[in-house]
View 1 (tube, rainbow, N blue to C red):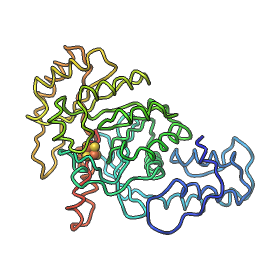
View 2 (cartoon, rainbow, N blue to C red; view 1 turned 60 degrees about the vertical axis):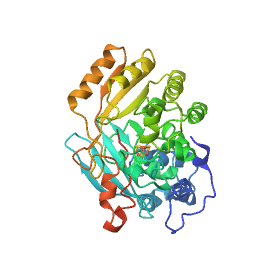
View 3 (cartoon, rainbow, N blue to C red; view 1 turned 90 degrees about the horizontal axis):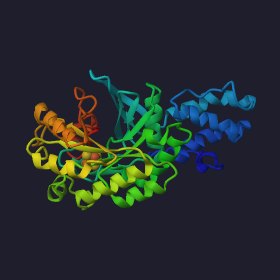
Length: 367
Ligand code: SF4
C-alpha cells in the first residue's frame, strides 16, 4: 500500500477547478476518520474505489465504527464528483470509448478493449507532436494528475472487468513520469494488478527505462518505434528524444530482459512511408532473437492528414516476411474504429467549434 494512502491531515478538496490531485481523493476518504475509522477500515474503501465498486461495509475485516456506514453515501457522492463519463461510444469490434470529463472541464479518452483491457490517457494533449496523430497536432494542454489516471480506471471498472491497463491513450507517459510512477504504484498495489498487466507505452528514452527498472512496480514496456530510420523518425516524431532507433530498440529490449516481460514494438503503418522491404529487413536484424514482438498497426484515417492507410495485403506480407525471419509479428487494429477511431478524435469532436482548431489535437494511436 503506498505510504501516502494512509496519511492523515489531508486538506479537504477546494472547490477551485483544477486537476484532481491524489490528496483530493484522500481527503474524501479521510472524512471517514470522523466516524472513528482507522487505516484498517480505510484500506477496503480504497480498494473498492479502485475496483469501480460502490463503497460499502464489507463482511470481512475489522468491525468498523457504526457511524462509518452512515457516512458512506456522502463519501460516495464526493468520489463520484471527481470525474464523470460524459459519453460512451460502443464499437462493433467490442471496444467502448469513454469520454471522461474532469472537474475543470478538460476531457480525456479511455478505451475499454477486448480481453478485459483498458487504455487510459496520461496527459491532456501531447508534446511529442507525431505527424500522424490527432492528439499530437494540438500540443500539450496539461498533465493529468495521479488521481485523474486512477479515476479513469475506477470509472471503467464500474462498467466492465479490467485486468490489464495500457498507458497508451492521449499523452506521452514519460513526459508526466512522476505522476505516472505514482499511478503505477497504486495500480500494482491496492489496484490489484500484476506488474506485467500494466503497460507503459512510450516513444522511448533510455533514462526513463532506468527509472522504470528502479521503481517498485515495473511495468511491461511498449515502444512506439514506427521506423528504423533516424531521419524519418525525427520527421514523424519531431519532439521525441533524438536517439538512433537501433540503440533505442536495444535499450528497450534490455529492459524487457530485466523484467522478463516481452517488449511490444508499436509500428503505426503508413503507406509509402514506413512499409518498405528495407524497414522489414532492418527490423528482422534488430529483433531476431530478442524478447520482443512487433505490432503493426495500420494507421486510422484522420480527416485533414495526408497519410494513407496501407492495403491490408501489404501489412500481411510484412508480417509473413518478419515471421519467416524469426521475428514475432502481428497486425493490430485500434479499438473502436467506427467511433472516431483515432484517439483524441472523439475528444476533438466534443469541443465547441471555436476550440477545435487548437485542440484539433489529441489523438494517439490507442493501438
Ligand atoms: S502518438 Fe502518442 S506520443 Fe505521438 S503525439 Fe500522439 S499521443 Fe503523443
